[in-house]
Length: 290
Image 1 (cartoon, one colour):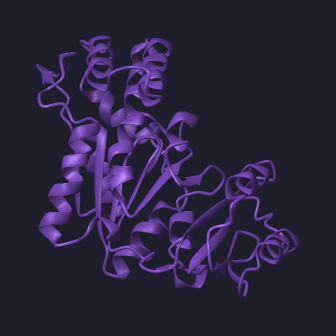
Image 2 (tube, one colour):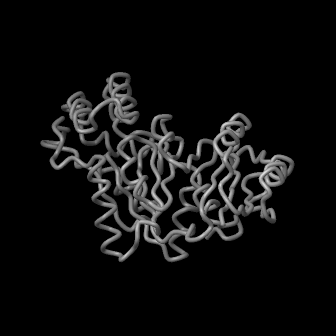
Image 3 (spheres, helix red, strand yellow):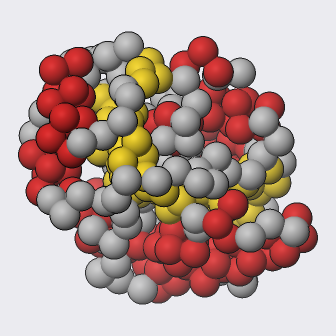
């Protein structure tokens, strides 16, 4: 059996009964279950419809996400999450660059790297070079004044942990930021790159080894092996090309507000919902949120 889940942006809450019931009837689905009024609903299917992606495309124009996945094992025992533009709404290196007055240059390199157009390690080295000499104190300023969490993140972590899941943060960003995000949201561990700092200023030189796509894959293998979990028991979420390795390994790889070239390689694409969508697709109703 399979489950089809329809999701709207929680701030709009404009998922209508007509839209959900029309699709259920067209696909011959089972009993309709509302997970959150106006936001999320699901129904069972005996097979994956052939026109799944055409319907997905049509619903995108209505501001609705559609996920079809196997019913068995959809509630996961581990969350492996990217940080920038996933658990938080910013790219930390772009915020540092903006303060340094080189925001436009760095943002353009970031966008190309996340879209898979540039080698991640080379792009990171080039961007850090533009931050040479930036005072270390700027890090705390960016955290205090510029970092905001992606809606639904607190619900996601609390609910999955309350149901026995392990949560890890793996980022191509920096430990100075992942430490803050991990502590605030409740991740049990975090991995990221280390900013080179000497005499109170950024050196502009990345500290090796650089954590990119392959390091995220290695983190996936390391943590699942340590916990005795199968890949099918993991939900991974990210938005960039350097996340694709772990997204493809996970039982549920979620492309969240991802670059088109990244989303096209994933079966679970959340473009309108927030992080709470990751709970709905596991079958949690809003009343189940911790």
